[in-house]
Length: 282
Length: 183
Image 1 (tube, helix red, strand yellow):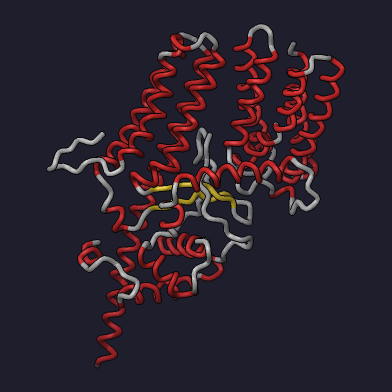
Image 2 (tube, chains in turn orange, purple):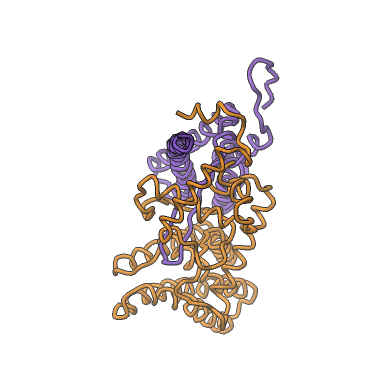
């Protein structure tokens, strides 16, 4: 079946068959217009990092595709997402006809360093979006659309290391407990929201809870450097408030308003217990 | 990695293959030989998990692309739903992928997961919960990559079939049109 395709000369944008394909695709996409509306925000190049994930496909909500619409679904948004937006038909023809499966050349063949830079900049931007006071936050409930788990991973490990370093005895246990508490806590908190009938994406929420650990990381670092109890209490309370403030909008917008407290209380509880862990370590 | 046998093809991307295997092997090796290197569990944990995470990243972003031409990721669209996206090279390039690269890729992926599974069983039997934590993290990273790439490969096959059938249909209809226009 694919022999007819590969018998011909390698696909070239100017071949007649390609132009037929293009016309058909364009007709198909025009007909199925509403289904293939491009995302309203400026399409970023397809992102590519999902670092830590245990069962990534339980929550997947791939719309069950009739083969026609799914391939045109995937084609049109991804073709348009190819940066920079190609000139109407010339650019499209080369990317549709030559690849047929999305903007392959752009991310599939980019140099490794580009990927690294892209991921690093995403971590920084996510951090700024979530944690730092930003009067122009578009909609805190929709923060972290480009979730990634590298940031949370670094922050959890850093917190564990800091706590472990501050501890004078039982360093290993402290680290293991901190890591397990934070990781399991994030998972359980997310499940809590889901079971309360809230609407969040599993990994988005994990990512958010991890990023909100950043203030506690700073607090733990300061407490490691200065050993005074009063200083520790003050620092921890400040950072705790900051963490909770950062996590609040996302969590509260995800659930029914009457159940807000049920969703938020465990988050607060987890950060308080981490705070206590920081204070109590000596 | 270069076999220099003129009859078979060599690895097309020896450096990528090397890195693909390097982090997996070093995570496993470090875990096994950990007692030789460090007394503290914390160091073992951090280094093993960091190596496993680096391996995850390398496989997902670099060797997946280069060795088998596949990539998968997750996006959240405007409505707040999560969509899994799969991307693959066009059919020509897929056909040109080096067989050795591809076999190395998939085999090491599976073997890595199996190895961590075995270690997990060992630590469960010995009731070492600490090490079970390490193994659980590494194992879940390995499984995530396996599932991601397998789904991506299936998706690529479906796309190829759909594309091919649509091409045939379009060719057929354009032939009909040109036939009728001549009449």
